[in-house]
Length: 105
Image 1 (tube, rainbow, N blue to C red):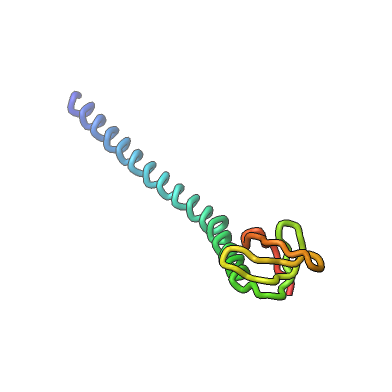
Image 2 (image 1 turned 30 degrees about the horizontal axis):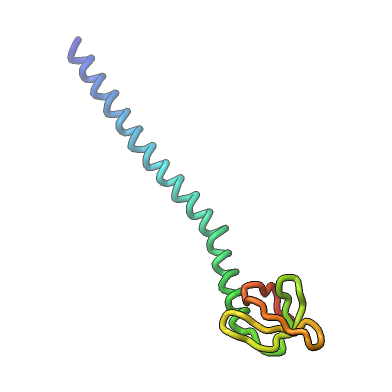
């Protein structure tokens, strides 16, 4: 009788251990799937958008019409981190390149 109880206890312990191991693998798989979804739908498109924005900033030329901080103007000079843009006849302001939202050709 005691042998039957001992065998049942071993079988129960083995089944519980197998279930716990399976639960960890399922949790790990679930976390990996969530990470992949976040990466492909949020991180990757944002990197692409930032690369396009940087390409736009690198291609700035004198004479381009730009929108910077809500102000339209024409580029008169391009520096490393700033541009000088004319917003009216004889009115030239210096603007950080990061403030440029759009370039009109």
